Image 1: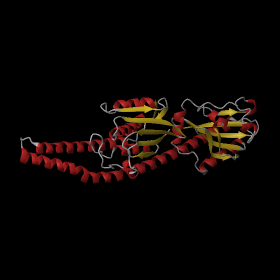
Image 2: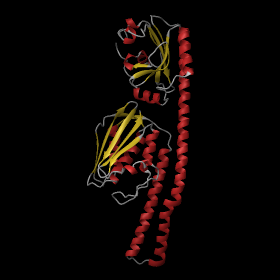
Image 3: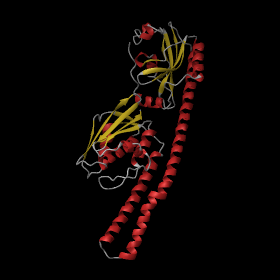
Image 4: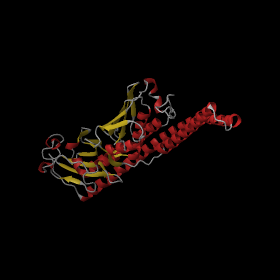
Amino acid sequence: MIPAPKPANEAKRLSALYEYNILDTIPEDDYDDITRIAAEICDMPISLISIIDNDRQWFKSRIGLDPSETHRDLAFCAHAILDPNEMFVVPDPSKDERFADNPLVTGYPGIGFYAGVPLVNEEGDALGTLCVIDNKPNKITQEQKATLMALARQIVAYLEVRKKNLQLSRQKEELELLNKELDRFAYVVAHDIKSPCGSLAMATDLIRDIYGTIENKEGAHILDLIGESSQSIINMVDGILKHTLTVNNNNIEKEYFLLGDILELVGKLLPADEQFSLTCENPSLELFSSRYMLLQIFLNLCSNAIKYNDKERCEISVSAGEQGNNYIFSIQDNGIGIRAEDQKKIFELFGTLGITDRNQNKGTGIGLATVHRLVHKLGGSISLESTPGSGSSFTFTIRK
């Protein structure tokens, strides 16, 4: 038996497949009708809609077969997707070195003939196949081939409708969340932002009415107040603008890149005057995702690790790997840590803990909210483990 190699665009193909969220869904009449028609048209006992996952083939619909999935190494359909433009036909597997000793040939269901049409989306990614199977050597006519290809196109059309419905559902959730954040923003404008503006105005009036051009300690204090209030406004407004521009960008462009390359860029963007080390366990890990969004996530988490650190030298370590259909990342630091009762609050927009960083500046409560939204937009989740005084470890996943 010779297992099929994986296509050259495997990461892109899997990423496209997972956007349909079709794996492990319940049977549906629309798909079952197609497999039934395919079996009858070709006069064969078995017909399948097979979806090729990372290490398995899973059957969205099956006629004449009991198992709901098999290992990918056994799958005839894994061979079929290697050429998205052609039907894959094996007239007699027992005489084909790729399949002669395949357990699906020598045992149940005893495959004696196979014909599969790749299910190809608009981007040219083969997601799986519509196939028919006989228990004895057979052949397929040109008319049957044309019918199977038409049915395969119908399956892809069903999948595209499913994906568009999922996208509409996600957009609805995004809009609902955005509306809630706008309400919260209005509250912040009325309270947290108006307050430093009021301090600035009062301080200016006092300087004008009392001190004029005279310099003394009280005057210097008021001038400091002006600077602090002004900077508070700038930080808040800048943070809001960055958050809005980042999380409301629905154009997710994925590409291949190495984890080490993006962390090298993060290191260059972090404050040069701070004492820190940024290490990575597996920099050669190849990723297929949004470089820009992942950069923003790492930059926010690493920047916070430096700002909220009471050690002489900040130590940040990054590890990453693959977990099923996701990439998983962990960023650990040796900072001040976060109390258990505060850990949920830090991901809320404008949620702050009322503490200052190592430069005595208060946070805006925007950075980690942005991280949370970006991780969500990339199909993942984020969690935190932290012990006050010992540091924090943020773990997040994103969809491949």
